[in-house]
Image (cartoon, rainbow, N blue to C red; front, top):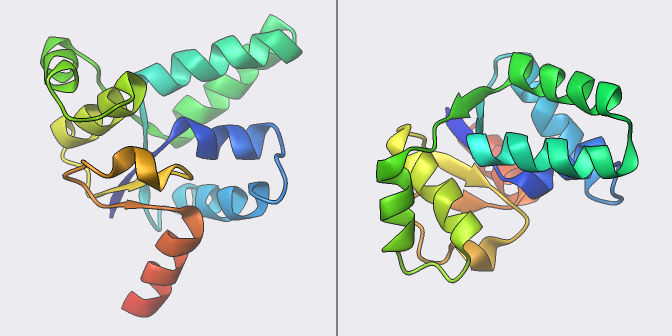
Length: 139
């Protein structure tokens, strides 16, 4: 199962944003155990680094990004992804880029807390709880 994690899910864990960090942590553990294949959009990595440097020193921000890149595969952002994102029906360009990056990488699901932002997605988008419930139902 190949899954793209939205930026907000990663930040929930890294910033221990309650009550969301518990589900984010559980999903990251599933990636760590290779129960699911986790992907981040390339723009997620740069955004996380930028946001972490606002609250941490650069050394700690780099260490966090190194951990993420060791755990997750990176879905590319290239000209095709940007062009598709620009022509999509998404209201938010960043979400459109995430979606097109996931499509380009052949991913099956997107995990996000902002489901409404992915109403035009061609890939199913789930909240962490919905995704975990779906996995449990599949058994």
